[in-house]
Image 1 (cartoon, one colour):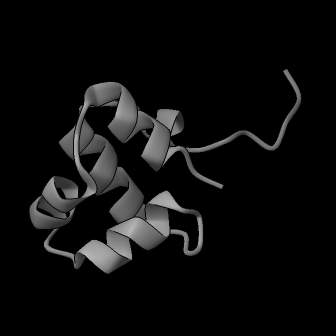
Image 2: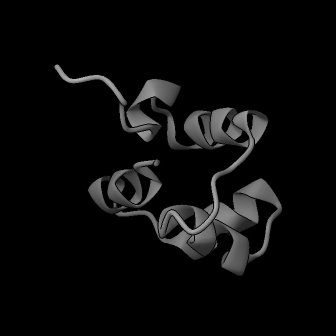
Image 3: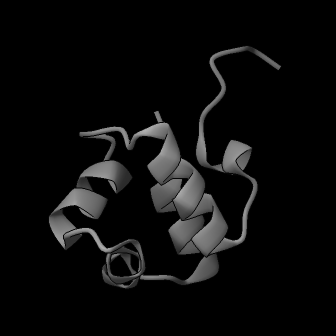
Length: 65
């Protein structure tokens, strides 16, 4: 599970903008944001760089805090 949608909303960034920056289709970015598909690690790291966040901010931990 990822937090891409939440981070985009926090930053006021549209999925279409992210898709353009990534060089991917809007449908692909939307699938990531809706957790229908998970991006490859390389893509997740690129998204983190584009959004200027730590890659850990884009994933949901599987461990209890």
